[in-house]
Length: 188
Image (cartoon, rainbow, N blue to C red; front, side):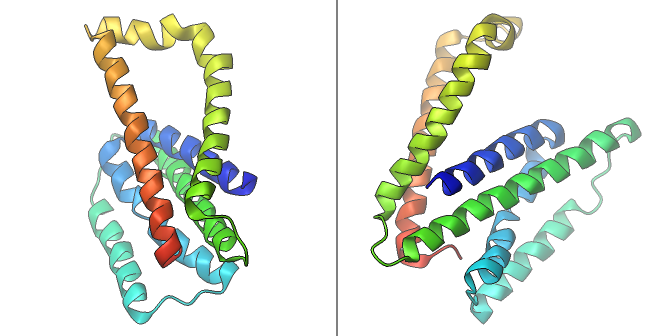
């Protein structure tokens, strides 16, 4: 459980850091590579052999990634930042894929934990880690990190709080559906 949570947390940190450097459009393209990394790790670590149809889907994703990223130009000064963001995002995608493969491995063991319980445990560890970070880093700098930006853009603190709550609910439902699918389909 700790390994699943740790790789998920690392993936989350890397992907969110990469998102800040590459922007949302390129991030979405890069984030699609999680499927490719999951398939490769599943084959390498678990010895799973995706079907021909699954390999075709993986190949089409890889080709789609290559075609959509072709021709994206950047200002020369931003190129280093962009490349760093791409590398960090891809590292995060490998982290997510590693987490998914570890979850698949855990669920395939005889007498393993129920998928929804595993979801709860992995989520609780991740939540605890993020809560500790929030308490030790963000909360002491709340005004400069959060409130100043909201005020500068004439935002509503209540709207931001509502959106954060919606994000938390959405993430919970996303993870719950993931573990529901894991029970039926595995990592790939």
